[in-house]
Length: 261
Image: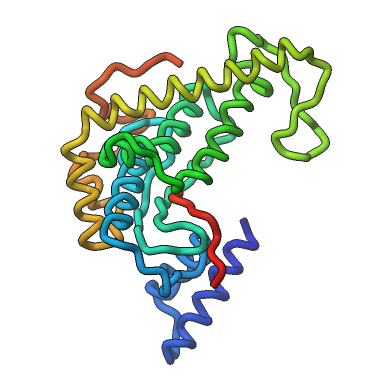
């Protein structure tokens, strides 16, 4: 938005001034984007080696799913430097989409759940608390597919959209039985994309492992690092990077509870 751009420009100018520069350069804008989008770097937060490892695989899971699925926005940058309430962040460049297809939404949801799936794959199936923000967004998208956009066979082309601008709240009339169906359909969507994501990451594990190790070493990697491992980003008009068949049926963030500092 215009306000975000203004904030980034102001932050870049402040960053240059703090460093005693006479002019703003690209590094100041890069730091400003990181601060505005990801939050203030938490220099006092020291992760243990195991926390750093799990965070690296979590973010690599987001990045790999986002890179391989054509409906996901292009990944620009991945970091395991704690910022704001996040231990790690995956930045993507939003596509100028006017609308999203069902397959686009399913791809984006795979990207969201990719962090938890990768994390479990290196942690003996044990989940951690780092996927709160991912799951908030995932849940909203699943319920929106079922209750807003007519993307559920059992609910059909009905919409319970609340037009008063209060977000993802649902409006009645619908029965308790319909409410149970809505819950079941939303869960079925999440279960489906979770298994799909698990299959994708298993089939591309060597590359994901390489990416996570590079993250542990460098803490920040860029799109070119991902492309060096997986090749060009999958796109609607480009090559499908997946080994598995696509179902017919979208940065992410590794969040934690806010600390008192």
